[in-house]
Image (cartoon, rainbow over all chains, first blue to last red; front, side, top):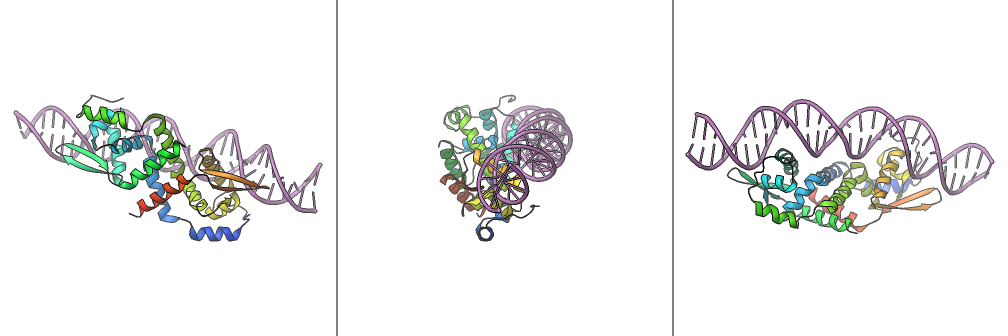
Length: 113
Length: 113
DNA sequence: ACGATAGATGAACGCGCATTCATATGAACC
DNA sequence: GGTTCATATGAATGCGCGTTCATCTATCGT
């Protein structure tokens, strides 16, 4: 893939290759960040940080169709960002992990310089 | 956009609407997360966490073309994730912010359960 | 000044993925 | 059992964006 090798510091490349995070771990990290990077899903996270909510209220809150909300919740569920609690026909979603909270907070601080 | 309103808990919707992060702040957060969510850019961040590097070495390290690396570095630069130091014709990139470090670490812990 | 090397940038292709539409499941109430 | 309400899911469309190719700028050495 790479063209004419013009590596300036082979020793640096070797050293970093050994020590950096890569492979499957990096793919998983990328996948997780992609999940929360989507504006719609980040809105959902932002709401669930305050309290658990049902799909119906989330749809109203975000001014979206139920279907779209449900699709995004499925993505969040598959990636263990949210968990579900059923109460009759209503299903309540909440965050499943403290890490989400931390990532959200740090990102919030970052964009506010 | 939303269809027949079937809101179950109007009070909850009102409350969360007032307290949740939204609007421009949320867009900025989403944009930042998208930037670091890309596998290629996350690899670059992973490498720069260890030490500053030049484009040439990064290309070798990631087995990519210089052009692709340069494009991604431009994205990272525009979003204040990395900063540049010029030394002759060689340019050394490094992370510009401690927040990146935190987001990376927390994400790493998250994917390792 | 000229060639060589490091990097940047513009344009275009191609794919991943979010939204939409339509339909399906599943629980509650009669 | 059938209807209604809350949510889920499958298929199809459309667009954002990462990669590639080609070109351009800038800096060093001679």
